[in-house]
Image (cartoon, rainbow, N blue to C red; front, side, top):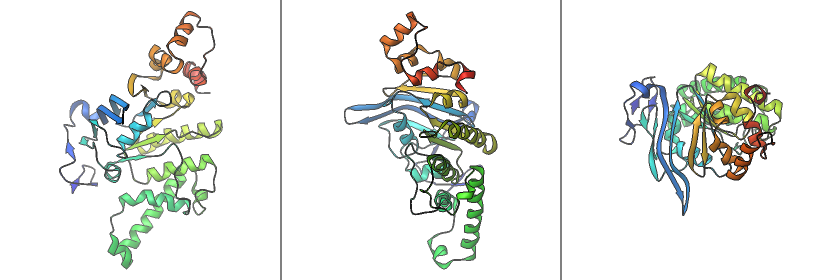
Length: 309
């Protein structure tokens, strides 16, 4: 068993390799290099390089089918890359299973809300807390004092997370009996239960109305500010992307075509072409007063103030 500098126990073995965490690596929480993923003849990711700074908020955007969720699945161990390396907090995690990656400090939510339908809100978050509990099967069966103390501590921590995400009043209700906004907050609370250093959010505002969307933006800001957790998100709502991101990476057909600040991405011709198509983008250069053909691009091209509402 490896002990992290924070005191956290990490899964041991030869598979977890450390890299030099001095110099620029000290500021890099996640690094992916040359990631390739194929599905039969289809190349979903083609040599993607990606860096995630500590405590940053980074968005991954791109047209449908660009490879965004495939990259998330690889980063969290759901899918294995065909080539390339992934380093997290100075350790090589390429090809590790999801449970080990969770213990190392990466948690995620999903585009389609995935809750345990026969459990309460509180019980769903307790499941997320399981990776940080230390008592074993025998202790659980015997209901030892250590087991009972750990369960009480876990429930207290879960209630703190439910209060933080604004759904503590739903704790004892069935998880699936609530609207989309509450379901998204519950998924975030469950992911936070594993005490991650990095939280991956897959379309966290999908299906929400504008008020719910801006409430989630505030929650994401608070997760970074109050918990010191880095946020990596996939999001189609450009109001969210432009409002919240420190940096943005753009994928198109499995290739990273651009990376930069929101302002740099807003003015990047390759990004405009990816959303509009090369011909339409050229026509827009000739007649810039023409309205964008894409609602997504229309928001992308807004000025920073108008994009934030």
